[in-house]
Image (cartoon, rainbow, N blue to C red; front, side, top):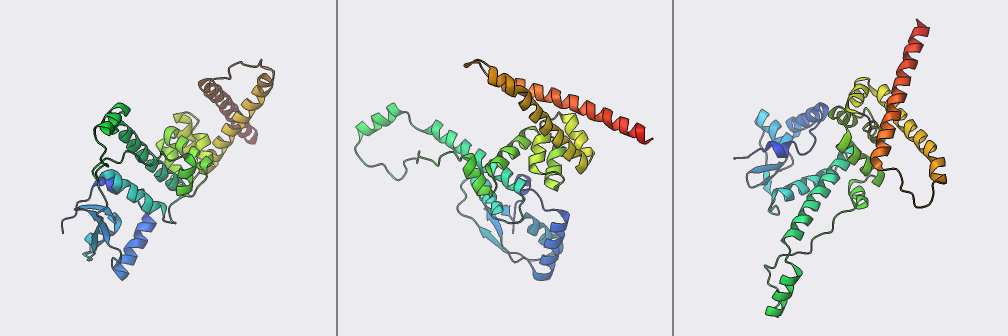
Length: 276
């Protein structure tokens, strides 16, 4: 049987951990490959780990075609829904997959809008013929763009967690993302650490779980101090004044974090000196 393994599909979902892969291999060696591999034509869609193990040990397996796929987006959406339904998927992975689904649906909505006929053309077509639309008429009414609430519901996580995962995806270094996936830091704490510079994030990850927690705490304290410092000014500001811009807030917070980090380093040095 000719089966094509596309690396893009193999890597679309986070791979099994070594322990999970070993457990699957032991199960297949003992009981055979019970679940059929899912194909789209000759392209392998689901069952990459099972396929690799069966090929390695010469174990027979079954395949099934999914005739509902019309495009690679359909394949991706199916893979996402399959994994969102599995209990072993972490909250972070659920959020990442749900956001991928949002991106695909957003792109489809934009493409549908771009391909939809203009109101003038629609009016001209309507006046030219009173016949009912044929079965080949494009379905321009597509599903609406999913909201953050619907994404959170699909992923079985909170809306705030979805927002934090979005921040991690946009601002976190690969080292910090790996720490979240490994469970070394919570999603909430990682979103806070992602506010730091690249060097600060890398240093925090290198310092281990304790350093990551400390970095997250420092960011939260800096934000709390900034809010407290701005509260009197905000209360006394004349009505109609513009609030501080987001870029200014971010710059001020980064400065505060840098000052606190420097102070923390000085305190550590002082403690080491005293202990010596």
